[in-house]
Image (cartoon, rainbow, N blue to C red):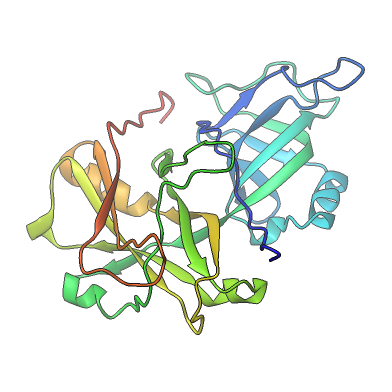
Length: 270
């Protein structure tokens, strides 16, 4: 039976944008000068975690959009690029420096599905958000044996590699929604741990024919900022609670916990 092909963005876990000359073309020239995760601003340029801005040429944006990338509708993205000829020789790598502006030519661009985080005042309040199916896992393994786990893009975005089961029809992707919920209840609050809940609504999909895997990024910047203001530092543990079932069919009563341990984020220029 023909299987659906689902996008799995490779995780390089880059903080900001890094620079490399490892990959070369046949002539020995690097295929790209930088690769990493960035956020888009007004659909016209990119900014990394250190405040550096990257302005792509219109021609390269047009080329990426012809391949399916939609810059105007993207928040978090992974890009690879080459500098244009008039870019200053000094390359930004994060750290103690003044943020720089760069003109670039995009070599590749992949959007990460991005969403807002929902707020609830209590567990009872959260129950009003539909949850009709489990996920399979937040730690999927690909065909090469690589296991992916939840990770943070700075203190701004929580990225979850979500696996679930669905009918073997591409149009059914739109039926499945994954809501990340933060319960703003001080009675359950810890000075070192932040807890989120993931709720899966399968919509009108009634089948579990195939596995689906997508990266989904959730904006948690304000929640992280409020936590730091109240406790003096960011949480060291970020816990995501989700209801899981390997068959993707039965919604269990208990949660499975996934954690990001020893979280730290303190760029020297912030």
